[in-house]
Image 1 (cartoon, helix red, strand yellow):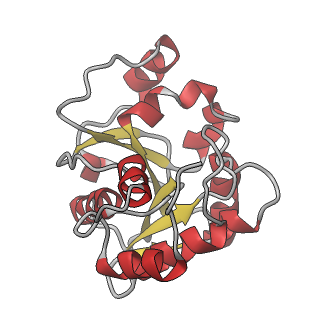
Image 2 (cartoon, helix red, strand yellow):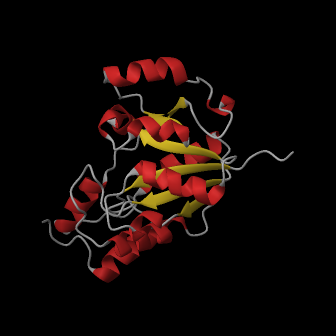
Length: 216
C-alpha cells in the first residue's frame, strides 16, 4: 500500500511574501519530508488589518516567489471567498478535495499557536490536520491555559512520528530570520531598498506595480 501524501499548509497575508516566509517553508518541508507545502494567501484576515495592496497582487507576488521552487506551491482558494479567511473552512475544503487519507500539516508560528483559542471553531482544527508549531529560540511566552490540556494529550515530540491524517501537535525548531512584512513596507514607503529581504522576482513586481510607496 502506498504511503499517504504529506501536504503542508502555510497561510498568511504575505503583504509582501519575504525570505522569512520562504525559508521557514523550505526548512519544514525538508524536515517533515513533505510532498507539497502550499502557501495560502488570506483574502480577509480576521485577526489583522486589511492589507494595503489587493489580494490579486499579493497572490501574484507569492506565485512569483515560489516559481520553480520544489516542493512549494500556491493555493488561492481563500481569495475566492467573500467572507473572512477562517482556517477551519480552508481545512474542510482541502479535505473535501484531497480525501480523508492525505496527511495535512498546518504550520503555525508560536504567537499564532498561543492565540488559537480566539480562532473561529479552533477546537475542530485537529479533526482535519496535524498542527506543526514553528518554535524559535527567542519565544519565551507560555501557552494559555486553554491549550495546556490539549498539548498534554496531543503533543508528539518527534515530527516524523506523526501518523494518520491529523489529530496531533508537534514542534519544529526554526532558524530565526529578523525580517517582517511590516519592516519591508516601511522601508519601501521611505524609499529604501528591500533587496535580499524578498526574492528578486517579488522585488521586480513591487517596483513595476508601484506598491507600498506610501503608508496608510
